[in-house]
Length: 258
Image (cartoon, rainbow, N blue to C red; front, top):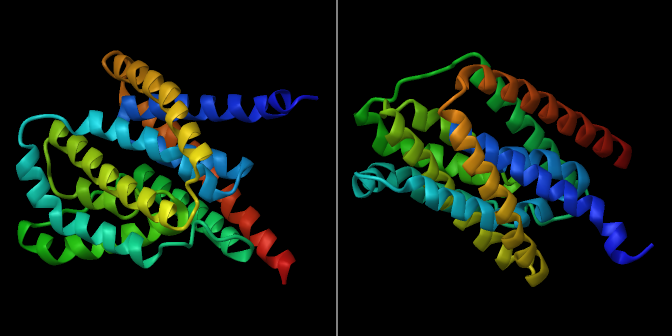
């Protein structure tokens, strides 16, 4: 069997996963990193999955943040965004490590997915008052950055926090895109600094952009025709199941290593 034939199943899996992640992002405004990290971490080390995610996540979020009021949104979210960068810096290297640390990262990813799915299904929507943002934003940002550095997923606790700001729908979509954009840049720089983003993975990440953009474009069309809520529930149940699998698998691996 040639090298191409042996690699073809993985290539097809990566393309399908990024198309699915882009589609979900097009429908509900998020989900690309969560789906790609969750599924691909079953087939490859989390650091490789995160490296493949960098370019598609970066450019799809650039696409998402455009619109009026961008400058004001940046200023409002700045405390949290600075905290995200600091948190990624504090946890830099966790995702790129191997051995037990990689299992801990995979288990942490599973736990993050389960928490995210449960909060979404419970429609947990706390309210953050403007006077709380200057001190709560940095705390949420650092926590999100640490989770990002350990798992490659940057939804917890940033997404619940941004949802709690009371933004209008379009502004909320841009705020999520901006948060994910900054987290992607911070994660990419951390992976690069630890040698986890070599040239071949950077090229593969660029190629993964094609199915991600195609899926996102299709998702945006579907969003105009299909109710998003039923789709969101199915997505969250599947995500929680996947997260539970990753957490249990990591626990078994760590127990066997002792």
